[in-house]
Length: 381
Image 1: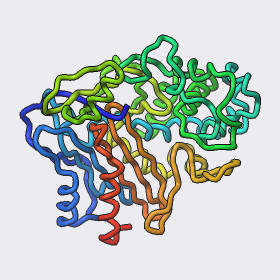
Image 2: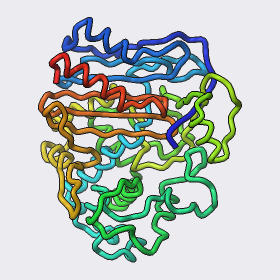
Image 3: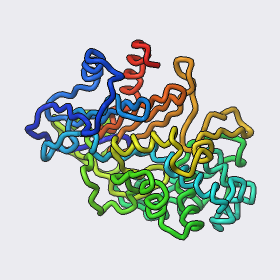
Image 4: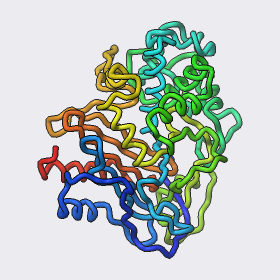
């Protein structure tokens, strides 16, 4: 699902800035142009935007509302579901355990997940990480209880894994094709738990979020828990795509204007499930250059590309290498019922752009693309 959510409130359009200091990389007219790009009408959900340059914020702002019920503005402290941008954090757990010599990327998956033994030892950890496993996506396999695979219906990571592994044969031989599958990263979290003897959320807290000071970042493996400053998801009530998609999973809404409120009910994680803030993502991004977490070997592994028996060789650890404006760029986008997200890093320039939206139809990548074009036109990239 890619959209939906709630009722209007009485707040006005909000542009909320970071409480952290911003550097002087952008001048006043440039900041105003960026504001015009992201400005929201009154009583609307919106965006959290960060431009990180040289390890500090050049700009960090919220545009619109995180919660329409109470008129709460989006700020750099608002917690967003990262959706697939979460994959780099799953990959970080893998990288740390590889560096700990707890497992190797060449290990057979069956060594840790016995249910995959029927696929043979040719299915290896590296195939999961680089999306070339041949495993069936869980959403392509009918759910055993008959419910839809939609976040309005409760399901866990383990249920998704169980059903995805029901087919006796892979879609293709591992390493011969590339296919985007969230199940790959769900399985990686399961293996991290088996090797570390911790829950995935505890491992991430102890080994990544805690050491980096990311005190407002967590794995949403229990959707009953309170997440401080959570952004609620919303989609336009009058959009026929929203009406059709919700109806397809048995959710029928009243016609009219305003917003439909969207809630993530299913606590699956690995391919998604990280909630975090702009302030915490600053700390995560800064580590790419300071290497305070596990040293330079960690960053080198996270950036690592690998060639298989197909043409796609630009994947890194939960990230993708591209070239833009003649410079290397490392990026990823995400979308789910409650969110649209995008993060792009230009390592040579020490520049990162983060765009998070509580509108699944908010096209965070498209908005960030427009911003990047502005920065390029200003000679910043």
